[in-house]
Length: 394
Ligand code: GLA
Image (tube, rainbow, N blue to C red; front, top):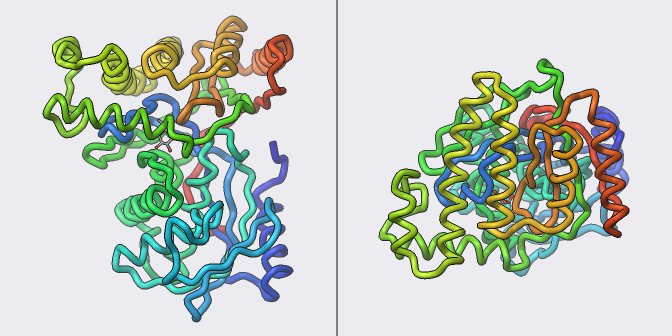
């Protein structure tokens, strides 16, 4: 975990920009990573999800260029990656540069006029932890492009939603990860002390107060350090299975299945595996609705139970958990957490638990011990609060 303050990172990224590109940047923009409280693998099914933005952010020091070239460097990688705007494709520039250049490609495809950029990025969002470091990078670049090319999209929720949609296209088409839209919406639209209820069918959003501190609880995130990759085919396979099931049922998305009609819908599906996938999605959407009602009623015990049920469904029906996530969530629960679940795409990454503030250190230690006993890589746990969206820092 980085201990650097936002001001320190802003200063460092601007200084690194100047060292790399020879002059001060026009500005620095940043965008947060996220954890999803509940509503997993629902976004690409037109469902509901409930992310918060993290205090951890990706920072981009940026200057515009007038020659249509994008040059990109990172505090976390060596070298400068370069691509002409006209050459951006799934093959070029490749690797992490796709997340930067892809945003400009998507904005242009949307009919917006953008030029080249010099970009230097730095991040306090842990990589590969399932906390959306890639969406944070896309959204920081989108925020910079909006301001530098006078797109005027950062000042309204509609504008920010449009930027989020372009970031999703960058990730889907140029970076080649078939993700839904939750992470980018979270990064651009979340507010401090609130979770974002995102309806991925209508595009509607609502801010749901989320302040565990006031109740004496914290949200503990554990990066399991278990390998996690969204481009490895498993995520795409889950998404394909859902889309195929919707076609088989003659509906647009699985969102159309009312929980009361779930059994009837399942009977019409051919394989047990597909039935379990569909059951996860439909029950998970219902759990989001119940979690929002419970948060609004101040019933954290019920939110905890919903976390547990979500994890069980992701583990048993959707099959996207892994041993590390199962051990971390079980250990958190047996050490007093109100509930615990994997967050994000799964197959590794992070889990979240609602724990009494005074128990956070003990739960952290218990998870570390359990990992040691199992022979897993040491995990990293930290508490987070719901934080603000992408913005210009200087
Ligand atoms: C990843 C994707 C999101 C979403 C989650 C699962 O984070 O980027 O779009 O599908 O997995 O809920």
